[in-house]
Image (cartoon, rainbow, N blue to C red; front, side, top):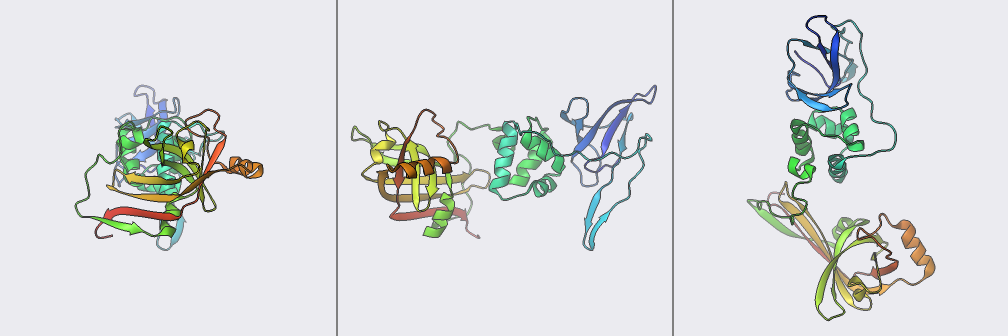
Length: 310
């Protein structure tokens, strides 16, 4: 028994030959198309790992094969049960409502600049199922999750969200790490447009404090929202440090960027409205946070850890 992504697995009654169940093959575990398969059943829309028995057969569909000389379409093979060919799964329609795993998969895919098609090819699943996983609540099999983790350079544990309450960096260090300084332009690129960073201030009681905030990058300024009586508001009128970092647990590498500069409150009404319009997200801490603080870096430095041969 051999199959391609998009083929259907049909399970028949051994007594009558009638179809008892059928589903689309959305994941392969062997390059030659032999079992087992990840099958999305048409009656439940669930995906399970299947080792077909003697009462099962493959209903083939048309496949597009890419060769060195161009693109060719393979012949449509007849349905063993005589029902004709069926089309591959289409991406889900309607408003996306992803589950936790789908959100993490989509985030890692975008972070690495991969298309759905390329990610699906690396993970050996169908692009249609990847679209379904990213846009609808789903519980992929362990094999599918491992394939996605390998394709995205992360771990199945991370995609499931395990360890979310643990601090980053608990993995093993690289055998031959290299720590290199980053230039100002690379630091600006890593700051990107928004995210979560930490601002270091002297709190109202005189003690040092480091507080995480949702930030935006607007022109050359780092801005965040807070309340007048909060610890981050103590940054106003002082020189502060602002830090952003990223740790890749699976690859044991990462980077950090440090911005130092004076902080001030944004008071001009049109500027405040413009910042509110351009904000990518609401503060995760919730509540009414209408005070915008702007940090204009006078010094921008950073470091990156990579293998010594890169």
